[in-house]
Image (cartoon, rainbow, N blue to C red):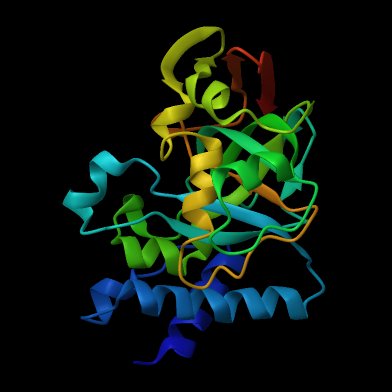
Length: 257
């Protein structure tokens, strides 16, 4: 299969902020493994351009949808220094059909090896923060197979990181943390930390068992999966997430333009 050509098509679509035909529609048999291979081509192109990888995102963390999608695990994708911000005003220019996902973000203080235990992961967490991952999709109407999502850089557009709370992480407390998502002051969704693979620490444990993940170096940022549905966003909107739990009380408010 012409995986480099698929990567070129997606790279062009991403650079021109346009749409492309999902690979699974034009190449029968396009698999999750093919999606990761395409993503590696895009990753190498980004690194060659001078961008630096700073961490990892997890996607498809809601296990209730796996059977319908033919999945047995979440997926992962790199995130980069030019897509992570702490700004509370974010421009949507260049993002294609963006949607917002409230997440819990972790930062590591020490290296984590593949297969690390939840105890080791908790001890390695330097900080916890609320976050908004802004996902985007270069396929018409967000219609795609899971392999297409993996190929499209994991659908990652941007990550807004809120105020950091010093770790280590309490896996049980974070799993029970509740999140309320608001649009312009109106509650639109609620969730809890456990909705993403059992909790943020459990999500990192999943990550460290996935193929192709060779561990996490100290200083990594991990966004651990959305805690509600993903909602379309537009300029002029103000979104807020409020996190409340035994050890994690904070909020993040962002205005989009």
